[in-house]
Figure (spheres, one colour):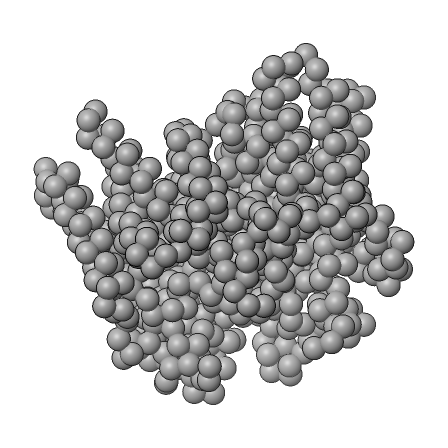
Length: 213
Length: 213
Length: 213
């Protein structure tokens, strides 16, 4: 129970981080409070919604409404405090928290898919990544922004490696599930934070050459 | 039964209005009859489809095919008669009918979600708004148009307020469900019509400042 | 069994063609190996995923993982060999294979929906088209490309006619199902190949006039 509680609190923190960074990401476009809130909530719960639809299980936020309330509240607060939150130091912190959120959502999702025995061993990895980045993709499409798939940013790739590692742990060392999950989340968060800090990107050798840009 | 019949006829009218305004909205882009028809049908039934997927209930248009036939027929007719329908007076009427459609779909959806006891009390409001604007969002994304989330137009906000009011009625005064639904639909339609007539938008205070545009 | 095996092998060939053309379609934009792979896989399995969600049946690629592995492998290979595959002759062949894939996926989907008795007779046609073009639409939206709905290319229309013909056969001459399916797939593939070869498009009479472009 205490561990479950802790997990839920971490997940709510991640939800808030997702919603806040989403609002800040679209704030430079002249969007009203309704639009920013919808985009904040979609970013926070969209990826998990797509995952649950594919799994054909009840959508997580309808089972546990706190996710919606926290996403709503965080989006509204972020709209109100967008000037303060856009300050470099605060925004930087939010970016790192957002990376932690992607790590947590991805690994949690991989575990959920694994427990359902759904499309093993590849679906836990695919749906882990979908959960982590799906909401952001929908946000960017609805906001008319370039999606992160078209950039060389290191965001989804750490999540993918983390999910692969976690699936290997679940298969080979199931008795180390909890510590393995924590290690994978720490690994993904660390990689993402390093990518933010040192502006790491996918090497050019692994990128197609744009015709003109 | 007569009330159900009436509801269905209203819903089919709204379906037609959604399909027709969708076709007219993309007609200035050099789209062929296939593209306009697909976009018309998606606009008319897309929002309800997303709602039913999230609710995990059978998709409404597969249960009652009239919605598809009316959307198809209306889209084809709108393509054929697009010159006539684009005339200012006719298009204006269609816009108001479209606003009525959004009101009807939103309130009906809120009632459906409420009856299923799904994620009360917040999901009926969220899915009411999704049903009203979801099809239009998918249309705009597929057509490469700016979605209404990025504009300050008063379209989804009246639906949201109407759904909130209807949920309060369902909770506090369930015996006034029918009259409450009618009142909420009238309220949303009126607010939307006023927004069209006097070009009301979300006040600037509740909108983020675009960096440059 | 041999027929089923044959079907599966054809479907895997189509999966590979979808993934490869998707990777080549986005390769001129400066996308990294992760982005191209995700877009390749989504193109190959996205349409069938949407179909299965609407049908409320288990997602096909979670039941038969080969589709994911082939899509993944083909996307990675296409990234590695993009220079060779972009040569005119090879790319032309891939385009025709892609047309065959759309035909096969569309007709197979129509048959699947028909067998489920889902929304007859219109849903098999709608979901046949969704299966054939849905993945490509999602790819284009995520990649910020114009979707094929906004072009006058003959891609989805042959699929639609093929699905209509197949539904008529299933209804009137169910004993000719196999030969009918083959004939419909051949018809759609032929029409698509003719459209590629002679650059056939929807006639201007059936296209709205762009305001300015």
